[in-house]
Image (cartoon, rainbow, N blue to C red; front, side, top):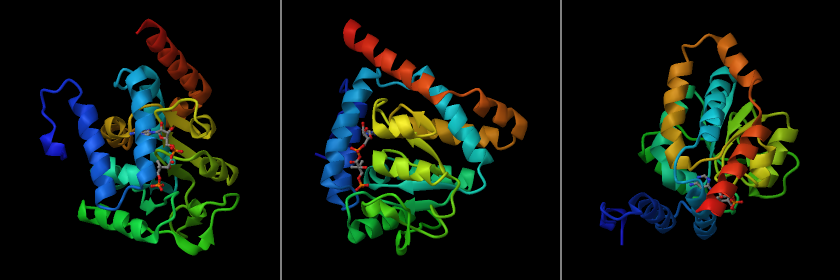
Length: 250
Ligand code: PTJ
């Protein structure tokens, strides 16, 4: 079965298409096998979120866009799942925000890092940074410690969807801000990040691109005010409450 074999009339068409896309990611060598498990976990939360962008995600999206516009050195970190699900939208976000794309993966494989970079380039990216073994993010032991001197090393804000908790903590400890997209509002990343968009990555990215486009011409003081009013803990609470209600009421 491939993406084009999923019948459009199927009630779970979008979900099945995404499954096929992530399986294809494994087949072409950009997504790890573990990525399938992570995707399954995401699917369960997506289901409980009504498979829609909810208000708490929109609140976080607006602040994420404002932060991307105000950051001096924003950076987009790409792993194997993000590359498979959303390469074109990540490239659009990079172009509109001026944030470089940097490959950074948890499950060590220099072959996969190169393939992710090639996939982004063949999808239209003008450049992609790869991790360098002589440039290290302190406070982290996994492969994710290797970063690029002109990318994460220089960044004041890192957009990193489907993150693992360790690196999110290390980025925050290094005084960088983190914007994440995570369907699980109780994950360590969701709780540690500066801004957590509790939504599906492929659903949320087009909205983020549009918001960045709109905010680019917005007065900086208006964006700063939007950021000041934001409370990530409150947003996570609203997401948890939504999931609990949906679970209890069906
Ligand atoms: O390519 P690599 O080696 O960097 O590996 C990438 C994965 C995602 C496998 C790796 O980072 C990992 O193991 O992540 P975790 O710790 O399983 O966390 C993934 C989080 O993303 C979980 O909380 C999932 O609920 C969430 N998630 C999964 N799919 C999506 C998602 N969030 C948003 N959109 C999705 N499509």
